Length: 277
Ligand code: AMP
Ligand code: MN
Ligand code: MN
Ligand code: MN
Image (cartoon, rainbow, N blue to C red; front, side, top):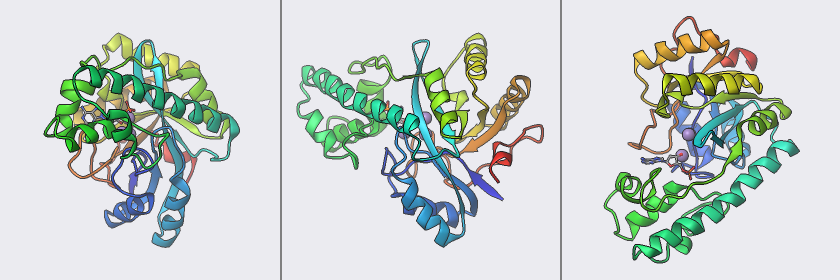
Protein backbone atom coordinates (compact mmCIF):
# COMPACT_ATOMS: atom_id res chain seq x y z
CA UNK A 1 0.00 0.00 0.00
CA UNK A 2 1.45 3.35 -1.01
CA UNK A 3 0.04 6.41 0.70
CA UNK A 4 0.40 10.16 0.19
CA UNK A 5 -1.70 12.51 2.30
CA UNK A 6 -0.21 15.87 1.28
CA UNK A 7 0.26 17.29 -2.22
CA UNK A 8 -0.62 20.29 -4.38
CA UNK A 9 -2.28 21.03 -7.73
CA UNK A 10 -2.72 24.10 -9.95
CA UNK A 11 -5.58 25.12 -7.65
CA UNK A 12 -2.86 26.44 -5.33
CA UNK A 13 0.84 26.45 -6.23
CA UNK A 14 1.37 23.05 -7.85
CA UNK A 15 2.21 22.46 -11.52
CA UNK A 16 -0.25 19.61 -12.28
CA UNK A 17 -4.02 19.84 -12.53
CA UNK A 18 -5.95 17.88 -9.89
CA UNK A 19 -6.62 15.06 -12.40
CA UNK A 20 -2.93 14.96 -13.38
CA UNK A 21 -1.97 14.76 -9.70
CA UNK A 22 -4.11 11.65 -9.32
CA UNK A 23 -2.77 10.08 -12.52
CA UNK A 24 0.83 10.67 -11.42
CA UNK A 25 0.22 9.32 -7.93
CA UNK A 26 -1.46 6.25 -9.42
CA UNK A 27 1.46 5.71 -11.80
CA UNK A 28 3.74 5.70 -8.75
CA UNK A 29 1.70 2.96 -7.09
CA UNK A 30 -0.41 5.13 -4.78
CA UNK A 31 -3.62 3.61 -3.42
CA UNK A 32 -4.61 6.27 -0.87
CA UNK A 33 -4.20 9.95 -1.72
CA UNK A 34 -5.23 13.31 -0.26
CA UNK A 35 -5.04 16.47 -2.36
CA UNK A 36 -4.20 19.28 0.08
CA UNK A 37 -4.04 22.59 -1.77
CA UNK A 38 -3.20 25.69 0.26
CA UNK A 39 -6.35 27.37 1.68
CA UNK A 40 -8.55 25.97 -1.11
CA UNK A 41 -10.59 22.82 -1.70
CA UNK A 42 -11.61 23.65 -5.28
CA UNK A 43 -9.54 20.85 -6.85
CA UNK A 44 -10.93 17.97 -4.85
CA UNK A 45 -14.00 17.31 -7.02
CA UNK A 46 -11.92 16.90 -10.21
CA UNK A 47 -9.42 14.77 -8.32
CA UNK A 48 -12.27 12.58 -7.09
CA UNK A 49 -13.55 11.95 -10.62
CA UNK A 50 -10.09 10.88 -11.75
CA UNK A 51 -9.55 8.81 -8.58
CA UNK A 52 -12.73 6.83 -9.32
CA UNK A 53 -11.45 6.08 -12.83
CA UNK A 54 -7.96 5.17 -11.62
CA UNK A 55 -9.18 3.06 -8.70
CA UNK A 56 -7.45 5.19 -6.04
CA UNK A 57 -9.07 6.08 -2.73
CA UNK A 58 -9.14 9.87 -2.43
CA UNK A 59 -9.38 11.66 0.92
CA UNK A 60 -10.70 15.24 0.93
CA UNK A 61 -7.92 17.54 2.11
CA UNK A 62 -6.62 21.08 2.52
CA UNK A 63 -3.46 22.75 3.90
CA UNK A 64 -4.32 25.81 5.96
CA UNK A 65 -2.00 28.74 6.76
CA UNK A 66 -1.77 29.62 10.47
CA UNK A 67 0.04 32.31 12.43
CA UNK A 68 1.20 30.85 15.72
CA UNK A 69 3.25 32.93 18.16
CA UNK A 70 4.63 35.04 15.32
CA UNK A 71 5.48 32.13 13.01
CA UNK A 72 3.74 30.65 9.99
CA UNK A 73 2.67 27.05 10.55
CA UNK A 74 0.70 24.84 8.17
CA UNK A 75 -2.14 22.60 9.34
CA UNK A 76 -3.50 19.90 7.05
CA UNK A 77 -7.18 18.99 7.34
CA UNK A 78 -7.97 15.43 6.24
CA UNK A 79 -11.33 13.79 5.57
CA UNK A 80 -13.19 17.11 5.70
CA UNK A 81 -16.72 17.74 4.46
CA UNK A 82 -16.11 20.14 1.57
CA UNK A 83 -19.39 22.00 1.92
CA UNK A 84 -18.87 22.83 5.61
CA UNK A 85 -19.71 26.52 6.04
CA UNK A 86 -17.41 27.23 8.97
CA UNK A 87 -14.44 25.77 7.11
CA UNK A 88 -15.24 27.46 3.80
CA UNK A 89 -15.74 30.85 5.47
CA UNK A 90 -12.33 30.54 7.11
CA UNK A 91 -10.67 29.54 3.82
CA UNK A 92 -12.36 32.41 1.98
CA UNK A 93 -11.06 34.89 4.58
CA UNK A 94 -7.52 33.54 4.22
CA UNK A 95 -7.66 33.86 0.45
CA UNK A 96 -8.82 37.47 0.51
CA UNK A 97 -5.87 38.27 2.80
CA UNK A 98 -3.56 36.82 0.13
CA UNK A 99 -4.50 39.54 -2.38
CA UNK A 100 -3.74 42.26 0.15
CA UNK A 101 -0.39 40.60 0.89
CA UNK A 102 0.41 40.40 -2.84
CA UNK A 103 -0.19 44.15 -3.11
CA UNK A 104 2.10 44.83 -0.13
CA UNK A 105 4.87 42.64 -1.59
CA UNK A 106 4.42 44.24 -5.04
CA UNK A 107 4.79 47.69 -3.42
CA UNK A 108 8.08 46.60 -1.83
CA UNK A 109 9.31 45.12 -5.12
CA UNK A 110 8.42 48.39 -6.88
CA UNK A 111 10.67 50.27 -4.44
CA UNK A 112 13.48 47.96 -5.60
CA UNK A 113 12.78 48.92 -9.21
CA UNK A 114 10.66 45.83 -10.06
CA UNK A 115 7.36 47.08 -11.43
CA UNK A 116 4.19 45.27 -12.45
CA UNK A 117 4.43 42.48 -9.87
CA UNK A 118 0.76 42.69 -8.84
CA UNK A 119 -0.72 42.25 -12.31
CA UNK A 120 2.13 40.05 -13.53
CA UNK A 121 1.73 37.61 -10.66
CA UNK A 122 -2.07 37.52 -10.87
CA UNK A 123 -1.75 36.51 -14.52
CA UNK A 124 0.15 33.37 -13.42
CA UNK A 125 -2.36 32.13 -10.83
CA UNK A 126 -5.13 29.70 -11.80
CA UNK A 127 -7.35 31.21 -9.10
CA UNK A 128 -6.94 34.93 -8.65
CA UNK A 129 -7.81 34.56 -4.98
CA UNK A 130 -5.13 31.91 -4.49
CA UNK A 131 -1.88 33.74 -5.11
CA UNK A 132 1.15 32.35 -3.31
CA UNK A 133 4.77 33.42 -3.05
CA UNK A 134 5.49 30.62 -5.55
CA UNK A 135 3.58 32.63 -8.16
CA UNK A 136 5.47 35.81 -7.26
CA UNK A 137 8.73 33.86 -7.59
CA UNK A 138 7.60 32.63 -11.03
CA UNK A 139 6.92 36.25 -12.03
CA UNK A 140 10.45 37.25 -10.92
CA UNK A 141 11.98 34.39 -12.93
CA UNK A 142 9.84 35.08 -16.03
CA UNK A 143 10.77 38.76 -16.01
CA UNK A 144 14.47 37.98 -15.65
CA UNK A 145 14.92 39.56 -12.21
CA UNK A 146 16.28 36.26 -10.84
CA UNK A 147 17.48 33.19 -12.70
CA UNK A 148 15.70 30.60 -10.54
CA UNK A 149 12.90 30.43 -8.02
CA UNK A 150 15.14 29.59 -5.08
CA UNK A 151 16.93 32.92 -5.68
CA UNK A 152 13.60 34.77 -5.58
CA UNK A 153 13.04 33.40 -2.05
CA UNK A 154 16.67 33.95 -1.01
CA UNK A 155 16.78 37.51 -2.25
CA UNK A 156 13.26 38.91 -1.95
CA UNK A 157 10.46 36.66 -0.72
CA UNK A 158 11.80 34.41 2.03
CA UNK A 159 10.84 35.24 5.63
CA UNK A 160 12.75 38.33 6.72
CA UNK A 161 14.11 39.01 3.20
CA UNK A 162 13.98 42.43 1.55
CA UNK A 163 10.46 42.25 0.10
CA UNK A 164 8.80 39.92 2.59
CA UNK A 165 5.83 41.17 4.58
CA UNK A 166 4.62 39.87 7.90
CA UNK A 167 1.20 38.44 7.32
CA UNK A 168 -1.50 37.49 9.79
CA UNK A 169 -2.92 34.11 8.79
CA UNK A 170 -5.64 32.28 10.77
CA UNK A 171 -5.45 31.42 14.48
CA UNK A 172 -4.42 27.86 15.30
CA UNK A 173 -7.50 27.24 17.47
CA UNK A 174 -9.87 28.56 14.77
CA UNK A 175 -8.30 26.34 12.12
CA UNK A 176 -8.45 23.19 14.23
CA UNK A 177 -12.05 24.01 15.21
CA UNK A 178 -13.04 24.54 11.56
CA UNK A 179 -11.47 21.24 10.47
CA UNK A 180 -13.25 19.44 13.30
CA UNK A 181 -16.52 21.21 12.48
CA UNK A 182 -16.13 19.77 8.97
CA UNK A 183 -15.73 16.30 10.51
CA UNK A 184 -12.02 16.16 9.67
CA UNK A 185 -8.74 15.41 11.40
CA UNK A 186 -6.21 18.23 11.97
CA UNK A 187 -2.57 17.40 11.23
CA UNK A 188 0.58 19.52 11.76
CA UNK A 189 2.23 19.66 8.32
CA UNK A 190 6.00 19.10 7.96
CA UNK A 191 6.94 19.77 11.62
CA UNK A 192 10.61 19.18 10.74
CA UNK A 193 10.67 22.26 8.50
CA UNK A 194 9.93 25.03 11.02
CA UNK A 195 13.35 25.37 12.63
CA UNK A 196 11.80 25.37 16.11
CA UNK A 197 13.79 24.94 19.32
CA UNK A 198 12.84 21.84 21.33
CA UNK A 199 10.89 24.10 23.70
CA UNK A 200 9.03 25.92 20.93
CA UNK A 201 8.18 22.59 19.33
CA UNK A 202 6.76 21.26 22.58
CA UNK A 203 4.74 24.46 22.93
CA UNK A 204 3.36 24.08 19.42
CA UNK A 205 2.46 20.44 19.99
CA UNK A 206 0.79 21.19 23.37
CA UNK A 207 -1.16 24.16 22.00
CA UNK A 208 -2.26 22.05 19.03
CA UNK A 209 -3.28 19.16 21.28
CA UNK A 210 -5.14 21.50 23.66
CA UNK A 211 -7.30 22.87 20.83
CA UNK A 212 -8.19 19.44 19.45
CA UNK A 213 -5.37 18.67 16.99
CA UNK A 214 -4.96 14.93 16.47
CA UNK A 215 -1.98 14.13 14.24
CA UNK A 216 1.43 15.21 12.93
CA UNK A 217 3.28 14.37 9.73
CA UNK A 218 6.05 11.97 10.71
CA UNK A 219 7.26 11.95 7.11
CA UNK A 220 7.26 14.90 4.71
CA UNK A 221 9.03 15.35 1.38
CA UNK A 222 12.57 14.06 1.69
CA UNK A 223 12.58 13.42 5.46
CA UNK A 224 15.48 11.38 6.82
CA UNK A 225 15.01 8.14 8.72
CA UNK A 226 16.28 10.06 11.74
CA UNK A 227 13.50 12.66 11.33
CA UNK A 228 10.90 9.95 11.01
CA UNK A 229 12.07 8.19 14.16
CA UNK A 230 12.22 11.47 16.12
CA UNK A 231 8.76 12.55 15.08
CA UNK A 232 7.34 9.06 15.62
CA UNK A 233 8.56 9.26 19.23
CA UNK A 234 7.14 12.75 19.65
CA UNK A 235 3.81 11.59 18.21
CA UNK A 236 3.79 8.75 20.73
CA UNK A 237 4.62 11.09 23.63
CA UNK A 238 1.86 13.53 22.71
CA UNK A 239 -0.68 10.88 21.75
CA UNK A 240 -0.82 12.03 18.13
CA UNK A 241 -1.70 9.90 15.13
CA UNK A 242 0.95 9.84 12.40
CA UNK A 243 0.54 11.03 8.82
CA UNK A 244 2.83 11.10 5.79
CA UNK A 245 2.92 13.21 2.66
CA UNK A 246 5.15 14.02 -0.28
CA UNK A 247 4.24 17.76 -0.27
CA UNK A 248 4.71 17.43 -4.02
CA UNK A 249 4.32 20.64 -6.07
CA UNK A 250 6.34 19.93 -9.23
CA UNK A 251 9.27 17.83 -10.37
CA UNK A 252 12.56 18.76 -8.80
CA UNK A 253 11.05 21.38 -6.51
CA UNK A 254 11.91 22.71 -3.06
CA UNK A 255 11.10 20.25 -0.29
CA UNK A 256 8.68 18.03 -2.19
CA UNK A 257 9.12 14.28 -2.60
CA UNK A 258 7.92 11.79 -5.19
CA UNK A 259 4.16 12.11 -5.50
CA UNK A 260 2.13 9.14 -4.35
CA UNK A 261 4.93 7.38 -2.58
CA UNK A 262 6.07 7.78 1.02
CA UNK A 263 8.40 5.55 3.04
CA UNK A 264 6.77 3.33 5.67
CA UNK A 265 6.07 4.92 9.05
CA UNK A 266 8.06 3.60 12.02
CA UNK A 267 6.11 0.69 13.57
CA UNK A 268 5.33 2.55 16.81
CA UNK A 269 3.12 4.96 14.86
CA UNK A 270 -0.68 4.94 14.92
CA UNK A 271 -1.48 5.77 11.27
CA UNK A 272 -3.99 8.56 10.78
CA UNK A 273 -5.61 6.62 7.93
CA UNK A 274 -6.88 3.96 10.33
CA UNK A 275 -9.61 6.59 11.00
CA UNK A 276 -10.90 6.81 7.45
CA UNK A 277 -10.21 3.52 5.74
P1 AMP B 1 2.71 31.36 0.76
O1 AMP B 1 1.74 30.41 1.41
O2 AMP B 1 2.07 32.20 -0.28
O3 AMP B 1 3.53 32.15 1.75
O4 AMP B 1 3.71 30.49 -0.11
C1 AMP B 1 4.45 29.54 0.48
C2 AMP B 1 4.83 28.55 -0.58
O5 AMP B 1 6.03 28.93 -1.18
C3 AMP B 1 5.12 27.21 0.09
O6 AMP B 1 3.95 26.45 0.12
C4 AMP B 1 6.15 26.61 -0.82
O7 AMP B 1 5.48 25.90 -1.85
C5 AMP B 1 6.84 27.80 -1.43
N1 AMP B 1 8.16 28.10 -0.82
C6 AMP B 1 8.41 28.55 0.42
N2 AMP B 1 9.75 28.73 0.61
C7 AMP B 1 10.34 28.38 -0.57
C8 AMP B 1 11.69 28.35 -1.05
N3 AMP B 1 12.70 28.72 -0.26
N4 AMP B 1 11.91 27.93 -2.32
C9 AMP B 1 10.89 27.56 -3.12
N5 AMP B 1 9.60 27.56 -2.74
C10 AMP B 1 9.33 27.97 -1.48
MN1 MN C 1 3.22 25.44 -1.57
MN1 MN D 1 3.33 23.66 3.80
MN1 MN E 1 2.21 21.63 1.23
